[in-house]
Length: 358
Picture 1 (spheres, rainbow, N blue to C red):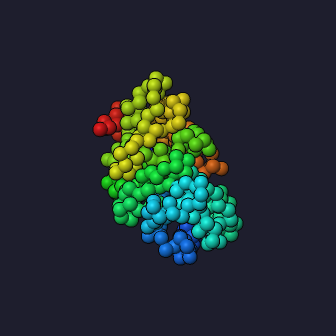
Picture 2 (cartoon, rainbow, N blue to C red; picture 1 turned 135 degrees about the vertical axis):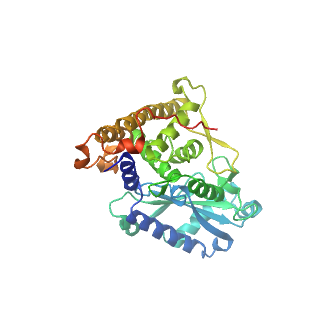
Picture 3 (cartoon, rainbow, N blue to C red; picture 1 turned 90 degrees about the horizontal axis):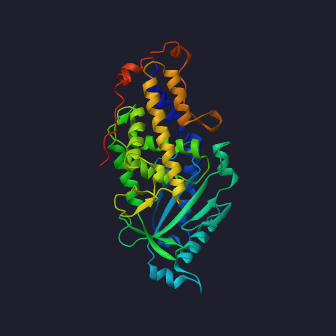
């Protein structure tokens, strides 16, 4: 008999990147990385390249729209200073050198210089690997190594600030792996990264293509507020949302923009969850609303799994065309209002509060 946990697992599987998306991403980043390390000019300074971002940390969902590649360089700031053109900042110089190296590989249909990276648009033959999925881009991030290639922080070039800023790509990856492996397994999946994917999909349902909240911010929030001991998906979601709402009980009364810790345990700086108070209030209000709905769904599942799933579609999506559709139980399961959820979730009086966030 289908349970609420089964439906959550099915939803998780539906939002994971499919094989075509993974094949395209792997082909694109592998080819470019291999060519960069043998580039006639920049290659001699490349200590190594590594994957970063949601793809590198395995928190990407469905289509994989971008892949972040860190290029660790043995150049010093003094070296870059000697390479820059007149009236060019050191940071702009490093990005220019990286852009030229990418263009020499012949792997890019187009390159664009962003604030801290080079965005690479790919040829059609690469994008066609994934069929009808949206086009994939690569973000190439050159960094300088102050100490050791495997130890953070690194220096990242910020051309808008005209400064070298610390970045923590190694510890972001390693701490994410540790955090995931320390979380409970639910239906064979570690809960931490799985919950990140669910919350990122929640964002797509309620905020669409809006940049706020950013996927990375949501990942930081899950890292800070999740309960690694949750044994059922519904409790993992409730506990995360409850912890957020406990810290921010009155979004409309906010007088400042809340900040969260980076997913790197080494980074002492905190990150605002939005650019404006209004946006922050909107995000937190939506989390308060979602908490109420998920709690209601958990209680409803004790007697009517179908209705519980319909409630969860309000939270996690009901649009199959967007690949964001919380599944409904099969017809045979809807004939019984009981549907085995009672045994899984306990009595309706067992709607527990999330563990206190410490």
